[in-house]
Amino acid sequence: MLDQVTAVRYVDPLRAGGSVPGVVETDDLGTYVVKFAGAAQGRKALVAEVIVGELARRLGLRVPPLVLVDFDPVVAADEPDPEIQDILRASAGLNLGMDLLPGARDYRPGLLDVDPVEAGRVVWLDALTGNVDRTTANPNLMVWHGRLWLIDNGAGLVFHHRWSGAAASLLKAYPMAAHALGGHHPDVRAADAALAPLVTEALLREVVALVPSEWLADEPGFATESELRAAYVAQLAARAAGSAAWLPTCFATPEEQRAAEAERAAATLAARPDWLKQVPNRHGLAPVEADWSRHVG
Image (tube, rainbow, N blue to C red; front, side, top):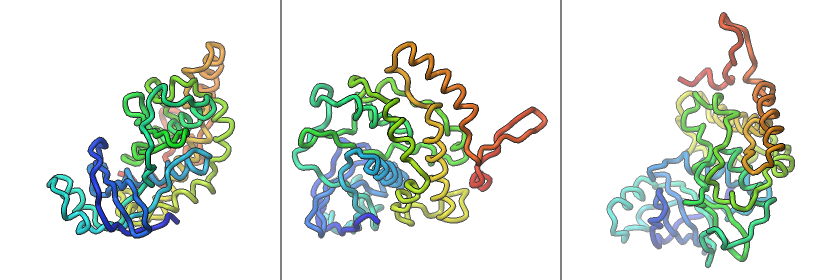
């Protein structure tokens, strides 16, 4: 489980972030950047932060430690901005904190020489989880002690905003053009060979289990919390298994691109999970939805 701490002082809002996270001191003597459940992005952004961030950590990428922050709006009574106060009042209870890296700088091109292998692994993770919010305009990367750290993973897992369409997005290609690390020649094929076999159902169950129950409550289309957790595991495991269909190819040689496109076409037809079996109908063949999606309106 993630460690849980209690907020004792609200220091400052970070207005550069669309969700207006805040710097918060806690009872473990730590200082965290806290994303609030009452922000516009809602609790699903926090779910994505946990799943994507903790998956990244287990795959060897650097993510600041995450904690659950029990927040009482009383500790922010002196915040003068009424709009921020609205967010804080709506965020009583559990929120997500990311360890503040003192002295860290926002990544920008030229600040750090990122190895193509590491760049490829970041791109691969973003492609797996559908994170399109790590761009040249908004890198969501920090440089601390000469190393690259991933932050703000809440834009990943786009499929969980509309579960009825999750199966259709399973093998969707990743839009790579503006990725923040594109200039470092990311070796995504090497990353795929190294990381895809590691994204097992067992690993995903471990990661998804870290999400607090209250952030998963009352999800339309799911009878139980366990069913919803299983849906996250099934979606990500199947996407990892079908990586040949969505692996970015824009940094390959022309010969590699042609081979990858052929592999992608074959994978799109063949790499279907058990819950996307083909069954006949009067028009030919059509995919059956996941077992869980029969509950989704």
